[in-house]
Image (cartoon, rainbow, N blue to C red; front, side):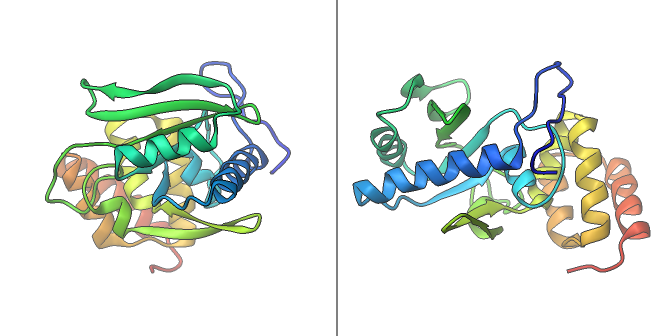
Length: 208
């Protein structure tokens, strides 16, 4: 599947696994050359692709905790095209920048909102606490867990994203408690949660 393009609902070609890993390796190498090691998490659909879920991916999202970390990434990527200069976006409470790295749009941002839940993909302690390490070339990349991503896609009602996630988690296993907290944090109805859990648990061969 690495060499296979997926067509997104917009008609655009989806990123392949090799595209995502290439952009991440190049970025992390640029940071290493600078002697920088900012804390980050890979989120979004790119995180799902890195964990083996085949779904449409338009860009790569990196979450950082501090605005200075966004600036550090920007400095490391200064030789690449800057598509959006690092700046504060009040509507979404993000300090955000976007670069093009090996043809991939790489977005780095903070998300400066508060929550008591550990079930949000980009807000609060969730992404920092619930992640897996995925080998990406010579790097081990921290990637936000699928349970948090699934809740995001269910909220957005993007079936071309949440259906592959459900199918993958049903066969590979999932953390039912974490998923429940994530769906609750996203305000999904109990009926919707039951439907999702039914699909997952009836098809699941194991639960981790």
